[in-house]
Amino acid sequence: MSSFEELGIDEKLVNAVTELGFVQPTPIQEKAIPVLLSGTKDFVGLAQTGTGKTAAFGIPLLQLIGVQNKYPQALVVCPTRELCMQIVKEIELFKKNIGGMHVVAVYGGASITQQIRDLKRGVQIVVATPGRLIDLIERKAIDLAQIKYVVLDEADEMLNMGFRDDIEFILKNTPVKDSTWLFSATMPPEVRQVSKRYMSNPVEITVGKVNTANVNIDHQYYVTQAQHRYETLKRIIDFNPGIYGIIFTRTKADAQELVEKLTREGYDIDALHGDLTQGQRDKVMGQFRDKTLQLLLATDVAARGIDVQGITHVINFELPDDMEVYTHRTGRTGRAGNSGIAISIVHSREVFRLKQIEKLIQAPINRMDIPSGKDVCRKQFFHFMDRILQADISHGDYETYVPMLEEKFADMTKEDVLKRVAAMEFDRFLKYYENAEDLNVREDRRLRREYGGDGRDQGRRRDTQGRTFNGNADYARLFVNLGTRDGFYKASFLQFILDMSDLKKEVLGRIDMKDMNSWIEIEKTAAAKMIRAIDGKTYKGRRIRMNDANSR
Image (cartoon, rainbow, N blue to C red; front, side):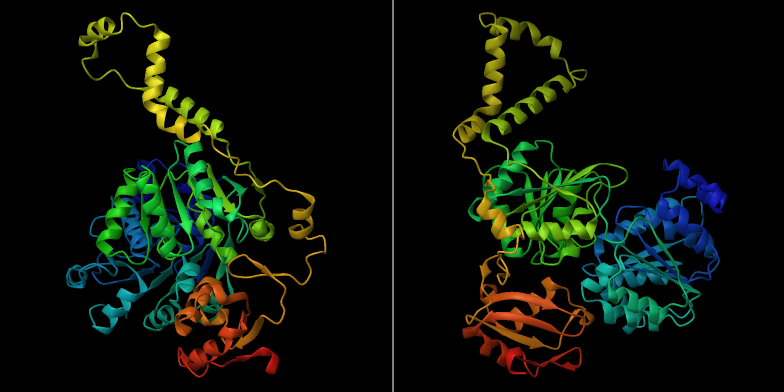
């Protein structure tokens, strides 16, 4: 592996990187930096989140840009406020030995007036979220006419969030750029289309395999009955007393319900979802980063761009509707060479989806037994003993109190004292778990026949609730001329059609999405209402057609 000096980086930048404790570049840095330092080549870098992509583009930008010019020369576009702030923070560290270099972050949820003032003071690098950047462009508060380098970071997430039109608008407003650099964890068709349309013969570098899982992550799953999903989650949390993790749910309602239940039971947890104001979101993230919160509950949209070091576990309370989202969720652990654990809680009808995810990430997902009540108590007890042994008694005048303690406990044996200490710590756990039931679903021949793919479940379908049905007269099949090319992935498409039609999720069956079209299975009693609500409406200037697929 090369050193940073061998990559052609300026001495001032090498010194800054070395002072930060980085000895050798990561694979994406080693491959990308020599290409980007040329400054004239379009570039596509595919690598998982947490592999050092910010340094891979930040260091070349700092070397290529002239500090004597006080106008924007480089533009970094990323999906969320959190990622925007993180990128600026890292670039600030890299540029510590370069005088006169200014970096400004512009994002929604903060004062646009202050951001305009920051831009007017003179800046070479602008890091922006798409919405706020367009607002500034339309107000003529930022001039992109002399931008030489455009970086699209987390491009797949931006497109998943519906920013395709915004990205194209931004690229059209940077007409004289020397090069465009695109970084992404995955390469869906939408990202490929953007690269073909706005980039010229880009150098493409892949670190690892696209969509594959981080090798530092141990993927596990637990099978339980649907009514025991919450209790299984608690059992997993209690079995991992040192856990510092994120729990993912499909909807904000699920996230809020879970956080209220877990908070009542004494867990250090809060939720991150779309109903929070920016101030509330910042407060929750601040508490999570400083580990005041042990756990964070989040929806996929609310968690976009979160990058917190040291996360030990990611728990899928429910599997995502879109399999590629699994990679985004689990990629938040196992970063910077650390190991991590990704856990999914499923019922027996969802196991087949894990097999599909295994193929996508090219890594095994191992079935685990849900810990028994005794297992949980034993694990908590060992953790408590370790805490006692590791307690720091070097600070504090404990010697003053030792004679009083010896006198107080003179009539007790050491064993009695230890039992009382353990009782104070574990009374709640022991009472809760002494008669705990077995939550595991045991495989039998019937389950293997029904869900193991031996041919006896042909014709059965699984709906959006995970239920099975027989594709018969109870369901209609609707055609709609919207697909993945319209910027949808399955979860966002599901939300779109439900919002348009004001129907409940329970009426839907299977959804099949293609590039240009989709097919929706829906209870026959609700089909006409959905067609009336959606057919003839417009989406991004295009007329929506929806009809009964069987009548076409």
